[in-house]
Length: 289
Image 1: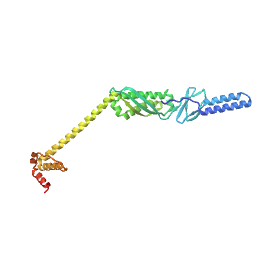
Image 2: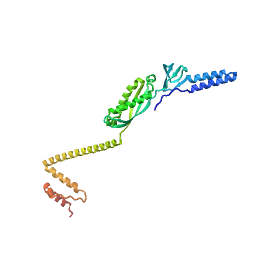
Image 3: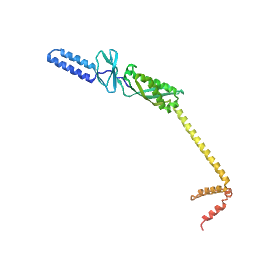
Image 4: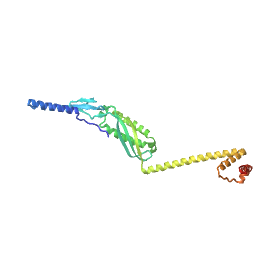
């Protein structure tokens, strides 16, 4: 989790402290008097607590006798020790907060565990320092509360299939809440939605049954289309017997064209289609002298 950086002694302040102390000690050795060493130590202590360095991505507020006087940074800044103090440093880069909701009931009373990440940044350091005590903890707790409320408003199927919509809704809710603190929420992403293992097995069986049902529906539709085609073909053949005979002859040809194939045709079918003479001619034509 991100943290707020508090005041710390800078490297420049340490260097000035050492230089002041060394100069004081050198003068004491030269003058054989302790006053320069004492003065050098006091000046070094002053620099140690008066010189502060603020990083490029940070801001810090200066409080003079407890009253806000302005922001400092980035770079080095000077304060009057005892009379002036610095607030915790505020990082203005984009930060990520990880939030989770465990065993939270959805709208259709299904317990789920949801993990989400929140991308946010401080756009107004002054407000984040003066308006809220600990803005990092505040945004984390607000995100957890908003996540639980959003889970309660959605059904399980919506949470699984509409994660982006849920994330946009959370982003809007959090942004409205944190804007007065000088913080903006850029986006919220739902990483994972976990459901109980027993319910997961039941949903798997339900999905499999649904796929089987869809397959049977498609098969039934195909059978219906085939039967309709047969009905149309039967009607066409009933009106044109010659076409029926030609179709029968084509079927026989397809059956016997392979070498060694034998087709048994009922005598009634031969008499009905008038194929006796045709078959006899074919047999005589294929006989060897």
